[in-house]
Image 1: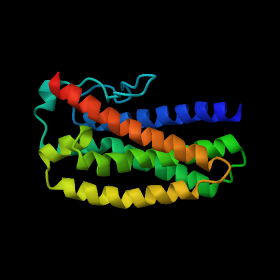
Image 2 (image 1 turned 45 degrees about the vertical axis):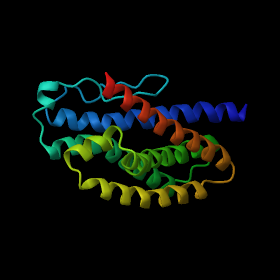
Image 3 (image 1 turned 180 degrees about the horizontal axis):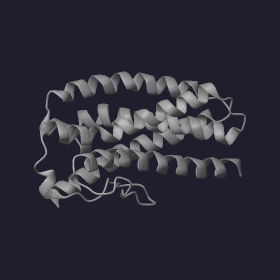
Length: 195
């Protein structure tokens, strides 16, 4: 029963992580006038192929390179902010409940996984947000790889720091998530380029 509850919490935290990532993109799209309603994002229950939603393509095509980059980075900016907030909560408040504690650790590690997987893996094999950045600001690709590599070390340190009560679950959940996210982005990117 305990691991079933872990899995339910894991799914909820993963869904929230992806939703907040897409809201990060959507915020900048609204800011630059290519979308209305920054909370309206497309995250299906199966999570894969999530997007910040429809944009006004005419307005999108008028954006400059900096605006494209800010929109593309919007998701990882949101992930960084939420991981930091969860880290502060974890440090400042003694969370005594096993399930809440695990949820916070999942929240931090999954947000960090999103960031490192986009910046490092997504810049090595250009897909999704990193392909947009490389197209409009190609010099940032090497910066993304370097920052992503540094964050990989931070991510591994975080996984090593997860309390033993649920460390194995959090590490496995993260590993499956990273592999799935990267594979899903590649498939989505290839499909979107063809269609």
